[in-house]
Image (cartoon, rainbow, N blue to C red):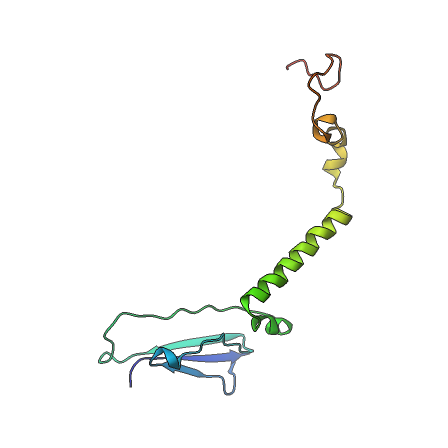
Length: 138
């Protein structure tokens, strides 16, 4: 009969009814789209016949856990998922630019350094020797 892979899905320890999948044979028999199954675990069983195994080959499996309300995102094309992720990232950055993050105690303690001309717009080319930023070690 040849080589095949059987995937059995479980939810709370019980097999999911009607969701045991068996794949084998030529490439055309294998799924081309992701398989989405509401399960919390699965078992992959590989069976082979030494008489039909003539070349070295294997399986690639990517398992992604998602919440039920996010299952429809898995069906989206990759570029649509990327566009959505970039939109979320852009809105997060924009909200930080508008509202900023809260000031922490360390920033309050070092406020005099943060408001100094050195960090505001840089130092002028020449500072008078009596200026507060002129340190004796410079």
